[in-house]
Amino acid sequence: MNPDEEKFSDLSGKDKTIVISSITLLIIIAFALIFFMYVGVFRLIGVEYTSRSALLLFFLLALILDGISSFLILFFKVLLTPLLTHMSKWLSFLLLSLIEISLDWLVIHTADDWIESITISNKAELLIVLFFFILDKLWSTDNKRKE
Image 1 (cartoon, rainbow, N blue to C red):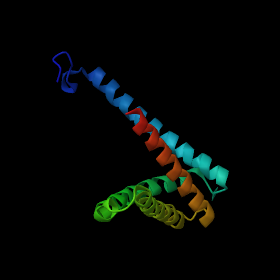
Image 2: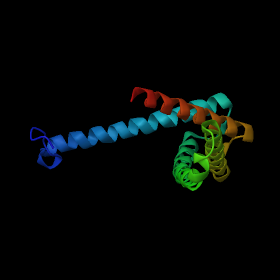
Image 3: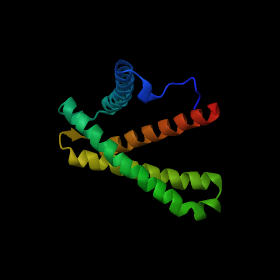
Image 4: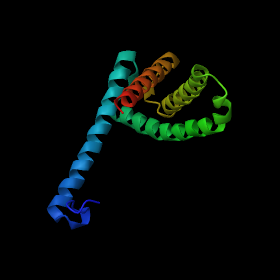
């Protein structure tokens, strides 16, 4: 650590409050942007919901299930690593994409079944998953190019 930098514990109470409030505000803004992106995609696809609180509950449930899904995707990547090393790049990408899309669809479908005040057709579920999958692949490709 550079001697010119201050430690968080050395800051005054006012400065600590400002730092914690700023970080909290940034996290809330990030979740709000993601939530409203979901709302926009749902409106475009024609998803029916009774209230915004039901949509927020759906979003939170999908977020929790997506965390579990991410762990499962990582598990499958580790499990299939010996197989993937002997495959061509496009075939391994296709296999991992199929696993990721399937698990993400399972997340959206499960959240839709558990929250009865939201109605999403199977076609809309698949469109949502494909939209976010493509967005994720494009976003991660842009980040790799910048590095």
